[in-house]
Image (tube, rainbow, N blue to C red; front, side, top):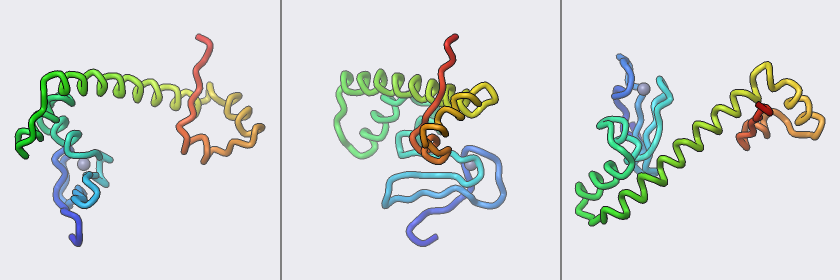
Amino acid sequence: SGKEFRGRCPFHEERTPSFFVVPEKGFFFCHGCRARGDAVDFLRRMLGLSFGEAVRELARQVGLPVSESEASAADSSQRLRDVTRLALEHFQTLLWSSEGASTRAYLQARGVTEETARAFGLGWAPEA
Ligand SMILES: [Zn+2]
């Protein structure tokens, strides 16, 4: 479909193709289940690989050498990113829940719009 490849999503059941691969930009996305990512993300999900294993597999397919230390450093770094992303999602969810109402009011009073707060991924951590 133009400069993109379109097909049925491998990550959810569907009859009408809503999965796109954009080779020029190096990513995939699905309008149905919102799956998205790059080649490493695709292999991680499809084959259940760690970040380092997916990097090693891609490197093998294109004939690039990857040392074990590079791959395991990539795994550690990816784990840290995964944990940080989970924390971000947790605190964002709290900000936009009923518990976050007073914090949202504070942000509004400081001139931070909802659009801006969402764009910058603001969250709220209760004292507990
Ligand atoms: Zn999908």
